[in-house]
Length: 175
Image (cartoon, rainbow, N blue to C red; front, side, top):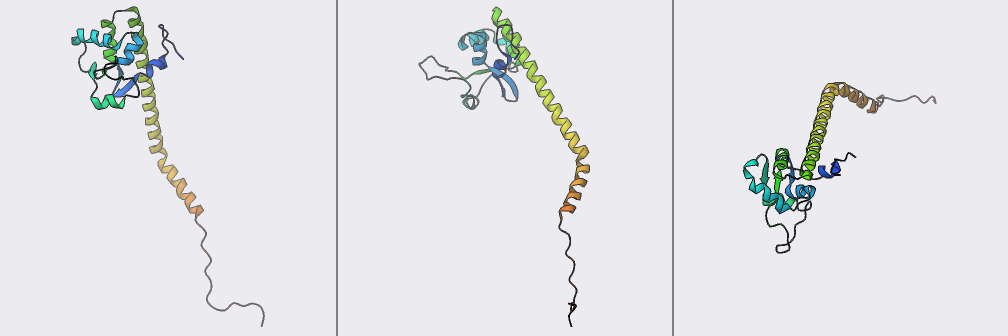
């Protein structure tokens, strides 16, 4: 397992990457955990620098999107210190922009680890697509050859035709 300098295993980062609206994103809660800050403090810094986070860098989840992810992050009841707003999702570019907003040494190291995890995920996805494409090509290429083999096997599996019975009397050899 590859570990980044701040001691964050890459698989821990990868588990915090979600596919939402067709984009790989990280939620504010997961990022805050990695940066070791409170979620509202992270969002506070983002709000102070809102012009650095256009919609393709960050967006707020819809209620139904947040509901489907409730198993991935803890939500407590109102009045108990829990979340009162819908989560924010940061794209790869948004996560990179966080390093200019969060100015601690940890933020820089965490951002480097996160960028490496995004690159690794992108490479894995490209490898998967390439394997699927090659499999499709092989299937098309060998489809006609295998079709002939299967037809030959089916012919061999068919029961042989019964010999036709002859019309007339049989000679039994006795008078």
